[in-house]
Length: 177
Image 1 (cartoon, rainbow, N blue to C red):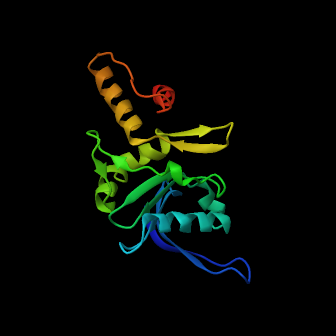
Image 2: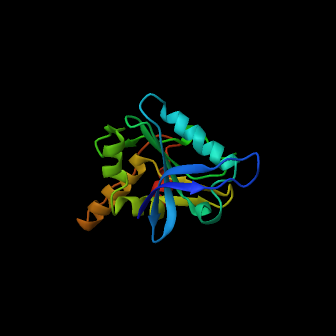
Image 3: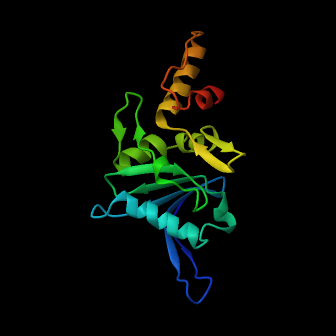
């Protein structure tokens, strides 16, 4: 289910009401939040707005189960695992790329590739990992997801293979998933 313009009422006199742009509910839980800006603004403005909401404690109650944030200005779209304000780091914003490594940046193309059913479900269930030591969620990068899908297809054909990539690219996590 998709909800838009969900209103969070102010919690103190120096606070103000806020409206979340778009939230995707899966089995009734808000698991994906989308913050949108117009093309005159950077997608980073949407990222900073999410950080502000986190600092203000707006993602609490049922919204504390969010697993994925998406920021977009229409032509530039990124995703990141949900985190506390101090742990939400812009260096983990990911651009979606297709299996040929072509970037998908338009919000409509992103929605088609990442937010369609069942892909959105897979993003928050199969391609999310909990790092219990750091107490953070990790959302796999597109190349990791494409590698997993390729391995699944090869396995169905009873073919073998290997995961090859540079140091620090997440091969262990990819292999785990």
